[in-house]
Image 1 (cartoon, helix red, strand yellow):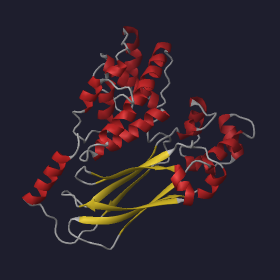
Image 2 (image 1 turned 45 degrees about the vertical axis):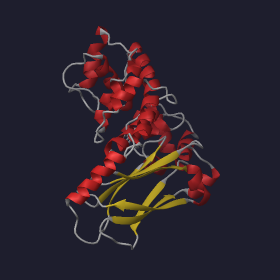
Image 3 (image 1 turned 135 degrees about the vertical axis):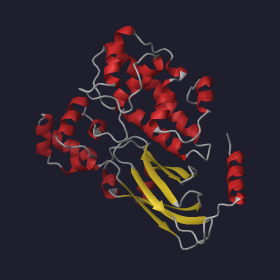
Image 4 (image 1 turned 180 degrees about the vertical axis):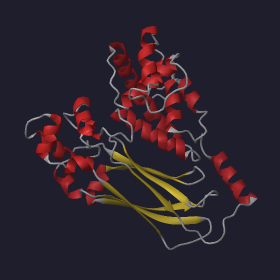
Length: 334
């Protein structure tokens, strides 16, 4: 709380999380935090906000809310989604409010992801909190087509031009001709080369999973390897800041967090890869694992992969296993 300057009421509010919250549910919870109490809903803004929420003829927010915008919480929710969706807002007071919301939201979302790390049976909520913290930092959705907006000298207008031209991923931008890039954004050489250089020196990751030949009925051992695929280019120059890292998070079908760790780029830059042997307990629902690699700074570089672990013998559904899960949940720190 002290480190991120978080209000006690916010901590109490998030202590009620059940662990299965979706991205939209976390945004709804965050929007009602006391950190945004100085944001006021003005009568003159309601028409703009309602248009952002629902309109057949315009681009609207990703997770529309039911009914009309009639509370401060709904306004905050609407403005968060509009900013992340790159929806232009002409009203000066609303743009000022967005600035306040994102300054405080950066702290709240960062704290939330660290707060949820202390629990085990909340994989879904923890994963979405990590994604949301990154979204607030980038001011983009995690699946945004406007990845170019994260590059130096590229704002909303130029990013829109690149999206309209089909340049919706870092790979497509890197593969594009420099002169064609300049025509798309109406800039002179060597602007296209500079954009391609920035993308070339962003970290690019590969994720490999294999199971070790040590089988039993309750635990599987997997070997996770993260590789920097452009290791040589990053030795020369890096676009990402020195503090950039990725978070590896693995969850099972029972919504348990099997593994989580931050991995700094500086570690990967030593020899190009990182390897870890991880023990994964057998879940009650299925053997499928959900493995995510999430960048701390950029959208468009994350990796998501599913992996089915192999266990010897039939799955145990007896009272003993259920009781063990219950005891583990009760003994985990609050």
